[in-house]
Image (tube, rainbow, N blue to C red; front, side, top):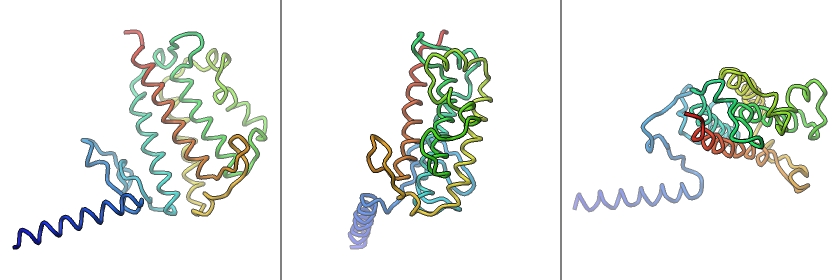
Length: 216
């Protein structure tokens, strides 16, 4: 009888947690599926959810972005300057170019969402620093080269620190602020910052592709 009661209790617990997970109300520690865990303060890298110092939704968004950034860093941290400059062909971007492009993308979304500037209306000093990596193309392929990995990682960190400080100043209602944006469709800040994260995921996949084709 004791064994039966224990089974019923475990079954009820499983059903309850499954329901909460499906509703997005239960945070699963993904480190249980991994052999390594990186910590930032009291938060584990693989804990997607609220973070101390931020409102719940903003903290959850930031935790997702933090995990994605760590995956990018692990993917590139041991590359040489020559490997960062490598291009598969004349139409392809280098890994270094894509890393600077990620920093530029985040910087421009900061200006659009934090400073509430219409896309592209920032001053010439900002454009001079960030337009090249933002647009890449032929000029980007020709000019973004010759840097060690520390250069790119410091740019990414410099921009991310701004994001973290600005996120901490805002509440979850800010995420719902909406304006015509993607294809002139109503777009809220949550969508814009989710795009920053999935954009990074997309380029991380491209970086992995290029790494497999580096000259041996």
